[in-house]
Image (cartoon, rainbow, N blue to C red; front, side):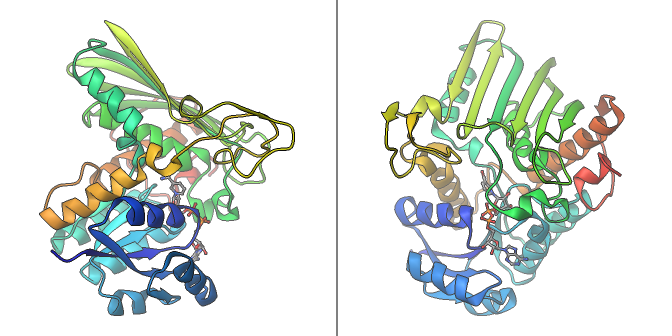
Length: 360
Ligand SMILES: NC(=O)c1ccc[n+]([C@@H]2O[C@H](COP(=O)([O-])OP(=O)(O)OC[C@H]3O[C@@H](n4cnc5c(N)ncnc54)[C@H](O)[C@@H]3O)[C@@H](O)[C@H]2O)c1
């Protein structure tokens, strides 16, 4: 069977990880083209990864490169436009998180892909991270009994590109950027159980941004006829490298997993060395160098699954509908942070970007 052809839109941080993941772990796929707005950068990215074509014109890429799947790794404000163009060009799409900027955009994208019989796949790698998947399987086997609380945290000292800090491009701060991971993982753990309410408190601690850089969100779900409280702690304020942890509490037990520090070795270095982990900063003194970073976070497993869905006509584990449900909860969180009240679901507000509800 022929290899599935992938076009990558974007040539930044996550594009590198996706291309590495396809190359090393998804032999049934090949990356045939890359787009970014600067032709020189597109060509440089193509050369670095051995990709045949670099484009600075998205329409030309869609018309010419013969791809089966468009993998959208662009800033959040471009996800909708890229997704709609992919659907119009009859391509399946993988969209990096968060799905898009508004619920209206999400509805349009979902409808466009459905109408054309195409897959809209929402890239949430925590649903594929091997350590979290092992924890989920243990819980599924009944090890901790009925669930009453989940916690997930993701923290570092702030993103690498300026657009993340400008809410017209990102849609919001850390709640939009990393809160989306927690919410997607809670929903996945709870088999997409309906969310009942959201309460959030947001802060802008020290970053130059018009959005928030620290957030606490408490969500309430109804799962198997019982209430489950979920706590998401997301921050761009914490120094000392990336942190990503889960805690699963049941009536018969508990399960903890730490994706970064728990997977790393422990090094003390007087002079430092090349790289410890994402956003780790210095490598002198005590550090926690990670290994197989992309694999341990679930990117290859996620992309392999999406390619398999396209090749075998299967329904993806995470879809455009899941991306929309996450976005709805993010909108509700910003509303809660402004009002100081719990917000009940369902919640629909058309505001162009989620954090507009926090600072109207
Ligand atoms: N799943 C994850 O954990 C994860 C991690 C990082 C990023 N992401 C997501 O991936 C997407 C990209 O993030 P990134 O970290 O790669 O960002 P980045 O800034 O590193 O790269 C963005 C790319 O888009 C290009 N670009 C920027 N503005 C553009 C414009 N106006 N027109 C065309 N191209 C433009 C840039 O030149 C660059 O190639 C975002 O949606 C982000 O949320 C997901």
